Length: 179
Image (tube, rainbow, N blue to C red):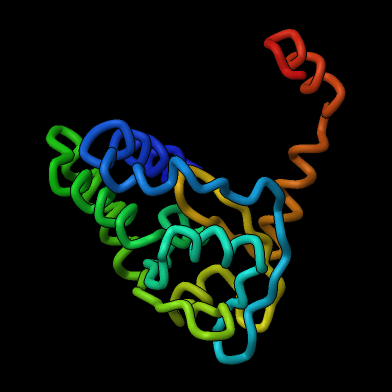
């Protein structure tokens, strides 16, 4: 989880700084609000659910970078968003070593992919193996300009964590303004 928090901090910095231009394209396109299930086929292709495919197509995106930063969560980045992350890594200053480590993991497990005519992307082989996604179901959601995907065990763990003390969580958020 440490890597995930660090990666999110780096991404948030990219979005508020040099990544503004990269994020501008996402302002007018509404992302999917739900979690969708899909499957990785025996050739390592992930068929994007229709609402996720539409989200990318409305932005004119047909090429993506697919990777992991925390070795649990797969991430599908539009190239413009990924380039903002690369710029952040390059200019990380006092976080240079940390950024270099995260970038190394991203490059090792990552790869560019084009969305094919059937709405599929090819997941990098090492990424599929590491996340246990070969010929398996996955769950997708949109967050921060990217599409996240997880396998069954991570999905179940996150789902069980989310359910724990749920009524208390809702009451706390309602006190903060949840409608």
